[in-house]
Length: 136
Image (cartoon, rainbow, N blue to C red; front, side, top):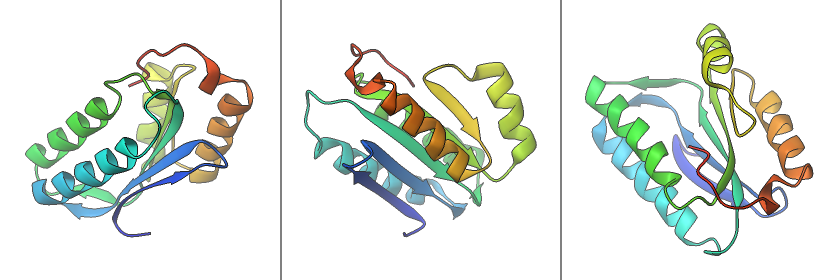
């Protein structure tokens, strides 16, 4: 998978959006466009899980990081994201985020397999069938 990619896995009902490496505003813009195109291709009446994989992500500027955060928030605007798992290489940071901001719909992880397992559990529990509301 490329450093900036968004791919839908219909078997799991999950979009995996990857953003890694040193990232500038142009990189985030390309990632945002790829994520938007992936989401646009999905059925408008469907719901899905989102895995945001930023292992190795290093924003080149505060503006690039802000653009990333806005892109994630915008992805959830229409309420089709039922659950989102954020993965990042800083285990301490992710543990703090999980304690402070983690919910039944939003999780923070340093291990991508743990994040996938958490999303599988949410999907198996019927979260994709719940009424639309904004997870991110």
